[in-house]
Length: 517
Image 1 (spheres, one colour):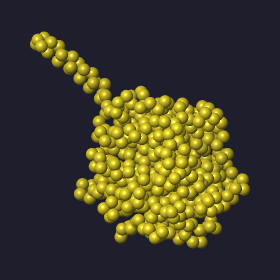
Image 2 (cartoon, rainbow, N blue to C red):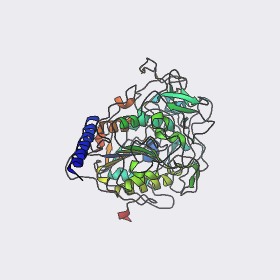
Image 3 (tube, helix red, strand yellow):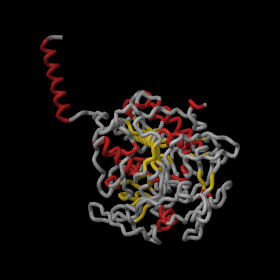
Image 4 (tube, rainbow, N blue to C red):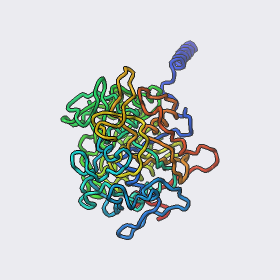
């Protein structure tokens, strides 16, 4: 090559570098974080109250067949549960809580409607579980094995063994709440934006799905996302048009991220679980995270053009992927900075079509794989649930958002206080009563405090706030609870004291540590 060509090439390269420097990086450095955590993995399961899984923690009774899978560590801190509160007997609900056995993990699905859950809370008396609702029906499903008052049942560490072992070795909260009352969709929207207000009803009936519609509606039920090819044709469908999600903040900051859904590659594929339940399709549209926002909708469930685009903006997949691609990225050492995971339906833990044993199988296999990856040393796994399913829990959280929508029942018909939060146009953001039911939350990380229980007040948008702060994204604004959410930082130890929590590899079938077998 002539010297003239070399100088021309060098000049062109200099111009390109000058342009890139002036316009910013094509993709930001995900290592630019406020903590040593470079990867957050949120595993968002289905429908569990705190007492339903941790009501006697850390004390577990032998199963009916004599099997014992969990062994408590000495010095385990106490938690606020049914046992410590003395509510296993003389319970105000008239029916005492009872243990559900490992041999019968399949249960019916409880009532977890926005207003019905408030009714069960009875203004904080927490005595409406199993009682009669205004329509005369019982606030409990009639389980074929556990009976008419199954809502009072709980599992212990000889069924939900893995979760109790994770709690023993890492950090857990006993004061974490759903941001509001109600079922799955409000829970996932609160995780992503801290605000169920901002929906537009795009198709079919609003009944049971949204409330207090003016310029925007508040989501109180389980509408499908508008535009998703798998959304049910006759079901109410919405779009979140009035408030951004954390996905929008991550995109603006050029931070890699993705939401990964079990069954996303097909609308109809299904599996049979360990206990023989046919849950139907693995993919459930109203669980589908960022499908509710037009900016992050992957309408046709299109995969990225190549694996190296997982987590990056490509105007094709829009950061919404099949769950399998999370493990592809993990194997290739390309795990996005932020990953939100949803198990296929048969493994998501939802009563009625899943169960704790199938849920455990998913959780353990996923967490074992992450722990054995190259990225484990800079990762925080957060396990939590979208709602309580209506299962009994004895604790009422603070009412941060008041509401006087027709569906409210906390202090009586139409009464959860008086809504005060307004949007930028001065419209009241109603039908956002909360905090709602108490829900478990665990942090699994080399930086998690060990065998630690955090008692500070947290809600689903505390996870949102942690992501915002770790990557300096700013706040959602517009009435989002991220502005008042408690911090997860109390569950971490970032000091350089050599006390990193070690890996904990569990058996996916038993939930016990592999080293103990």
